[in-house]
Length: 317
Ligand SMILES: NC(=O)c1ccc[n+]([C@@H]2O[C@H](COP(=O)([O-])OP(=O)(O)OC[C@H]3O[C@@H](n4cnc5c(N)ncnc54)[C@H](OP(=O)(O)O)[C@@H]3O)[C@@H](O)[C@H]2O)c1
Image (cartoon, rainbow, N blue to C red; front, top):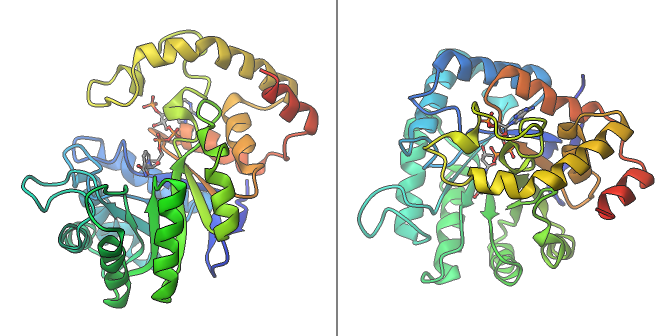
C-alpha cells in the first residue's frame, strides 16, 4: 500500500491523501499503547500529517498531552518528517480569554499547546472557527504573529464561510503570510460546501483538508446492520453523533453500499475516493479507533479513481 501526496494549494507543502486526526481516541482516558500503535502505523503508511486542536480530549488538552508524550518517548527523531497542526478558537478554559478568536486567546492557547505537545513549533496553526464578535483583522494579526514568532510555520482557517474566508485570505496575503489551508466538513452525507465553498477554494487557489469524511463512521460498514454498540454514536462523551442521526441516514447508506459492491470496493473506500475525486480536496482527515480501521481507511489511497458510471450512480441516489 503506498500513499499518494497532493500539493496543498499553491504552497510548497505536499499532503498525504489520507491524514489522521486526534479528536477522538487519544485522550488520557484512552489506551496509551493503542495511541502509540496508531501513530506508528500511520507513519509506516505514509500518513505524515497529524491534526490536533487545543480542546481535543476529553478533558480538553489531553490529546495534545498524549501526543507530546508519544513525541518525546518515541517519535522525536521523526519530527521533520511529520506535519503537525493544532487549533484554537473553541472553548478551552473558563473566563473571557479561554475561547473564540481574540489575539489574547489565540496567542496564549498556542503557547499552551506547544508545552503540552513538547514541541518548539507547529507546522500549521488554525483559527478553529470564525468569531462573530472579534474583528477579523485581530484574529489575522494573532495568526501572523504566530508565524513571525516562529511558533507556527503556516496558517490554517477552519469552518470559515466563503465571504469571511476570502477576507481573511486577503488580509493574510497583505502580510505576506498566505493562508495555507482551509479545513471544513465534507462527506457523502453533507455536501453543503458544493454550493459555494469549493468555488471559493478554487478562486483563492487554497489547499483544503476535509474533516469527518466518513461522517464519523456512518460511511463505513459499521452501521449497515443497524446500531453498533461499539461505536461513537453510542458513546456518551460524543455529543456530535447519535442514534437518531444514524437511523435517519440508514436507507441512503445501504444504497451507497450497493454501489460500493458494484465498484468492488468497501463503503469506506468508496466514501474516501469520492472525496479525493475532487481536485479542490488536498487531503481527507480521518479518525481511527484502532489499527484495523486505520488500515481500511488507508486502503482508499491505493484504489483507482471512481468510474463515471459509479459517480453518476452516487449522484442519482
Ligand atoms: N475543524 C473542525 O472543527 C473539526 C471537526 C471535526 C473533526 N475535525 C478533525 O477531523 C478528524 C476526523 O474527524 P472524524 O473522527 O469525525 O472522522 P471520520 O473519519 O469521519 O470518523 C472517524 C470514526 O469513524 C469510525 N471508523 C473509521 N474507520 C472505520 C472503519 N474502517 N470501520 C468502522 N468504523 C470506522 C471510528 O469511530 P468509532 O468510534 O465508532 O469506531 C472513527 O473514530 C478529527 O480527528 C479532527 O482532527 C476537525
